[in-house]
Amino acid sequence: MATAEKPIRGMRCMNAEVFLDTNIVVYAFDKGDLLRQQLTKRRIGELISQKTRVAVSIQVLQEFMNTMLRKGESRAFLREVVEYYLQRDVVENTAVLLRRAMDVQERFQLSFYDANIVAAAQISGAKELWSEDFNTGQDFGGVVVVNPLEEK
Image 1 (cartoon, rainbow, N blue to C red):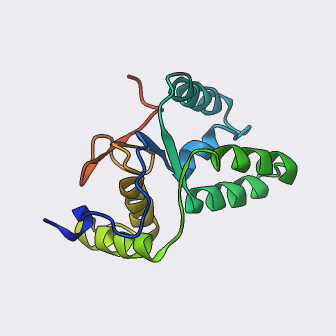
Image 2 (tube, rainbow, N blue to C red):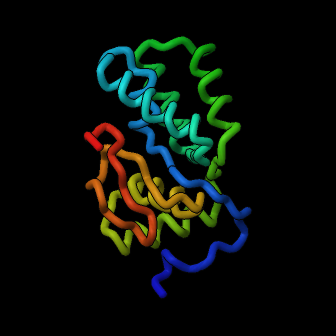
């Protein structure tokens, strides 16, 4: 069994179905591309209405906050969005996540920050990683990439 697929010790078990990458969360609130914003909001809304367990990581929320502040969004609004996502399954930055990310980076030859996203998706228990940064259908040890902006 490859290291990236070993059971996770020291983490509470999560049962997320979909893990959202930073770009997807940003697109849902980015007023600079209304078409992409509408599509992303609709797709995330479908997840929520179907009661799909959605996960993010602290890294995703940090990157979201940083990106949207640079785009001029208000801190108060961003805080509301972050608080909303903190009510979902959240993968925290831990030594376990760091070790998993290093294993993922080595196994799949990813940048470290991409490996951290994949590792967080694995830890969340998600079967799908919603992202535009990877190839659709790419399988990272049981987590399959889905680009929610592509036509179904």
